[in-house]
Image 1 (cartoon, rainbow, N blue to C red):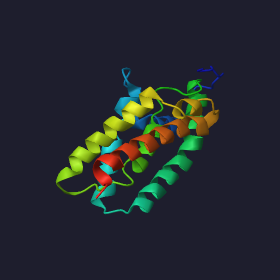
Image 2: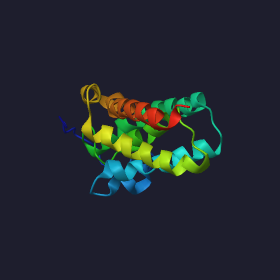
Image 3: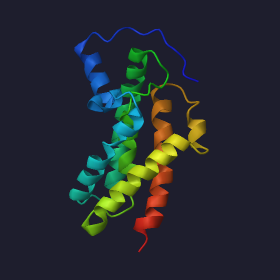
Length: 167
């Protein structure tokens, strides 16, 4: 499914910035399980959203902003790296975390349990790719790179809400 593209080498400062950002500021370049390493950004993102006392709709707004930014960012990074969905590109994982934590409290004594459970649930669904997450891989370009992680984030958010959000 990973189609190779003819890619120019990243030469410009903008291209280097695109790769730095898309690859999670270096975490996506770790050779073993780059998606998991890149997903570690989800913990400070979740913590920051909880520390600022954001509402669920503000968390979703952050996710939408990261998604919209991620489409051209991931598309360009894929072209630069010459792959359809390069493993080192982890912005898509990072962008899903405001959704993962949208409907649960991120403060108080359970904060670290919620953050950890959200991280683990997201990784399970991102790796397992149950339908329709798996079907999202067929979408081309930056949208395709982004949308499967958002779908995995929906699953993780639902389970996290069942575990910690119901009162």
